[in-house]
Length: 267
Image (cartoon, rainbow, N blue to C red; front, side, top):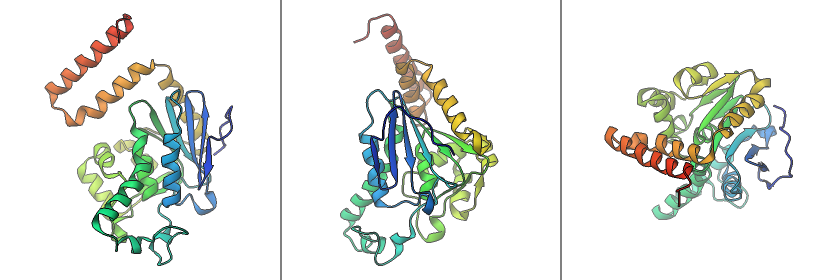
């Protein structure tokens, strides 16, 4: 994938993560293609920092990756006694008290949660393999545009683990319980065509058209007024947790706010 042009230098560039901002569009790039953008605590901390550094002007966040693979998932160093430099190995984490272990996993999850903030729309551009933590990082975004060579796989269960980086909720919401269960328990690859058919991805394009397709989608979202986008996203995000009448009420309240704002009567 070609690197998109930006007007400004990186806001953040460390531990396999680069953040650049071009007016209303921020781009978060995974920058360790030699290791297929494997993930670990340092990368997760950098992703958390990228979310904190987003200027208020940003409306779209594009998540992309250098190289042939989006992300091959967790760095297997996590399972060695030595672990990562300066980090506890997963084997050492297992010996921590319940509260400390829970807090550590919650910290790691923070790298995957901010992508669904109400004030932004996040778009993952996925090529090649998106495995385990890579799959969950793509699921953390609002929308997914995939190359025709994209392949998703949830391998945690086959390793004796569970997907714990916030991927289970969006996966069930996108493809349904039965298919999500089958994908997680078998660890099989989900190709791009199936991803689009099942709703896991919005569209699949040839690999050399991936950046262009993402840019076109971003431009379409930016063409709508920001406040209307924010209200619509909030309505749709909350729809699964509301019954029909509660959703109708939420629509009315949101529309009242929009009408008053357009009439110059907003707070």
